[in-house]
Image 1 (tube, chains in turn purple, red):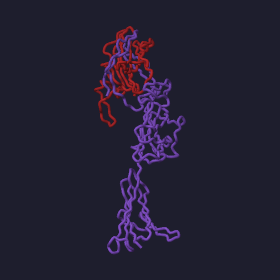
Image 2: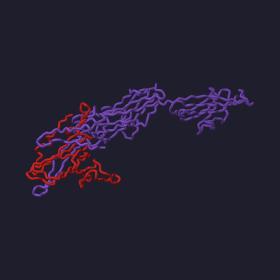
Image 3: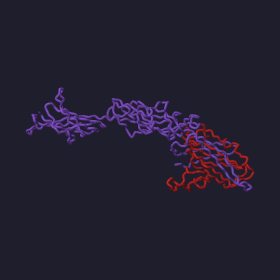
Image 4: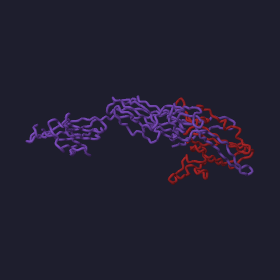
Length: 345
Length: 153
């Protein structure tokens, strides 16, 4: 909070010019972190009035001149990432959206130039930024074909004080990126009027006819978005057990072979539309109604459940019968096991 | 940044209003913290060149009895300019108002209604008017200076 360290004007007398330098090395003030503040171009007018009694006892008044100050434009902008965390992606993926919010924290309407840098340190790959898109319809999410592609110098976003705009950066992920790799890019918004060291001023360039002066942000801001490759892989294993008609495990006609097909998803992320298909081996016949998924029976028909038995075609050309099971989305670290039985002819 | 002080504004002869025996002049300065070569900082008052939100202003009121008779019961009232938040004065006898000039007192003794209707202690930024009441008459030719500080909202 504000502390009462007072200045003092020494030796002011009408008719003399006195120095107004005030000494103190201890003066310190809290910075006011107000948004935008008084709009650039506003006038601060100060007038005082006085009343007194003259020597005749009559009430008198006096009004001062009005001192006017025009408020100049402060050039300040912030950019923040609007993604809740890493943007998960896949190798060679295109149009991967990184989302940012650009906010005018100055006190005048201002246009900003946008720029993306992808060659940043501390990551494993550089995404290729293919376009910057402005959230033209203001719904906060990227709408392909609806939101306007940013063209520098042509549709630079103009923001009112405290105004903000969503900006999307679309990238292509290199095909060489591996599971767990991160790639960063940064979006920079720079005030078109001026940037530079705080205090740098552009005479007459401020909104409302005053000067424009670079604020504490330097008149520009940037933020980083991070892509994270989550490349899931899948592996299949197949095993079998045999039960012969005599209670043993010999491969003889009439023996029943139980096949177990296991799909394991590794890496990170989730695989979608995973399906298992396995041909019935030559010399065997599918045992009707023996398909299971995770131990639960599946019907052979083409119906609502995940499994189907496709009957063999004698041909020509001959096509063996097969079982097909739709596993849908499988997250990394999970497995799915399908079993079915065949009888040796 | 020029650190030239424009006191001549205060000293302008135009401040003597013909009809008033006491003339009142208003001027404003920007207060800046300047760090000198040794890392030592000091506060300087500048003539306003660039003024932006967050800047500290010093409003100076200069009065002078231009008549030949003393002026008694001298009271100066200064409404706060809208874009400026009051930041105090070093005139110990000054009083402030937080209710649009209806009542005056020491800031520490004043209360305002909060957004939820509760009364709370007034803060500097609540001040709407500053007032100075001189106890002693201003002698003919007598003069003085009043001042307060503000911050551009």
